[in-house]
Length: 94
Image 1: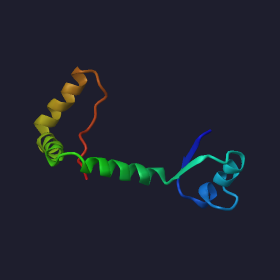
Image 2 (image 1 turned 180 degrees about the vertical axis):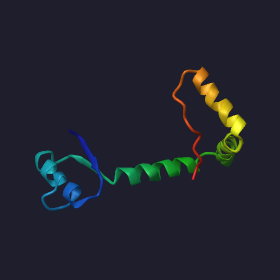
Image 3 (image 1 turned 90 degrees about the horizontal axis):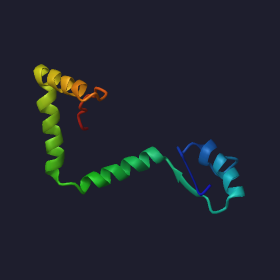
Image 4 (image 1 turned 45 degrees about the horizontal axis):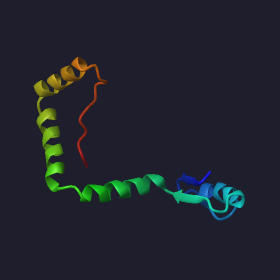
């Protein structure tokens, strides 16, 4: 084992009697990462800042174009069935 990742709960990564302390007793050079969901969110947010603005605008425009029309939404669903893929919704970016 070279790494361990979990949320930041005391029983997982606390300094006293946690899973991390028990693992590091046996594996002193263990890489420990806490709050991986928060870390992934920060990485994704920073990566998106490197993209040109027009890419986000395009994604929003596609969402609005399809989801604001029942006819286009129906065509989108038919297209997914035709391609034999699991029907998905186009999610709105936050």
